[in-house]
Length: 537
Ligand code: SF4
Image 1 (cartoon, rainbow, N blue to C red):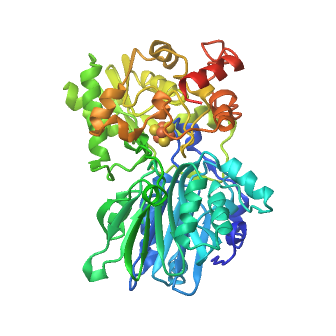
Image 2 (image 1 turned 60 degrees about the vertical axis):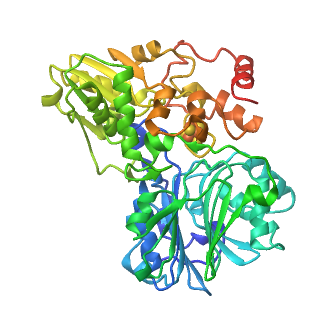
């Protein structure tokens, strides 16, 4: 067990030797999707085993991050913390949880979007605040973390992790002469980007959401018989397993303080008289990120995905014998496409449900086998058939190409791709780990060029208008930037340039089209111009 009262890296340094290893993610070789960011969970419930409820909460949020997890618990005088690399079920034991008594708890699942996948970047993070030690768990990504970090370092602040979460923590420390509410409001004035935060002091649970509400965060309540305690979580699916009923979504720019005096709500924009930021929930939560049994903006995610398929069948009909989906997130849209088209739905691809993460690196042959580690075609279903394959998104295109080939190899006579999101053309800066723009297959390529690359007989993406119809909310309440380049929170130019243009080194993961002479970025100056014109410099 590793309980620690220290900060940053020290907070997890006592954990097992697993910390020195980096996880190898087989899904890297098997999936070509944006990776989830993080899951956050918090509970204030005197008389309840809050450590166990938090365990089940972050267990339900495991899909939002599988690199590391942690739980912090306060009993009013002591704060106990346990974090480690790996899955929730690997990190916590009965003994661990038994050793964490208290009435407030905060939990976190991490997928590293900023900062490396190393032990000192696990969360919750412990920091000093005006109310003593504060445990902090974050989902999202700040767009001005590097400038804020540089300013703090210039003031002599030393950082212990590479996470932008620590930037928020260090900002709070610098405002520790103010009340916690004032310090949080001041921190919000300094930071820009996506953040759903769950925090606790020794006696108060705090939940806050950025003024645009990019990442989800909801509020639930335990039953009267359990004392009516409060629960906050990234998704409603985590409320259910913690025994809480959904109350409402936490509003963009809202801060909730929950303690023995009850629940108090503070609004950032009202308090500081800030201009109205438009709501901008990530629409990709509906397409792929959120768990299907979660509710977002009053709509069930599974239902929305089925609707995407139904509407796609109307928009892009096809002469075919069967409809199949790419497991798991493509399945609801495939069922919807079958319903909308009248073509029978079948299971044509089987997913190995037990591939998660491993410390063992695959050898070169295994890498080349790639997707077969995760998906297996059902020859009996596919042979001799004209097949519609429904997938939720295409990012680099590498996996989709393999899937099309796999279905052909199993004997399909035609393969028609239908995608339940529009072409993914712009990178995300708000907490979803995507490729740089040059590696996105839809960047500067027509649908016909993408079809040819994937080797499909036909290809159609759902239109933005039809996607919006499927989720049942006005277009104006969403961030849709990865599809239309309209970033709701402006991106500092240095950050934008890094990912939109030259990008990180994605060697070995590129779809290879740019280097093979296909249409792509002409020159750095052309691209700079493009960014200035279309992404709002
Ligand atoms: Fe979501 Fe795309 Fe916006 Fe990122 S850019 S927050 S993935 S809609």
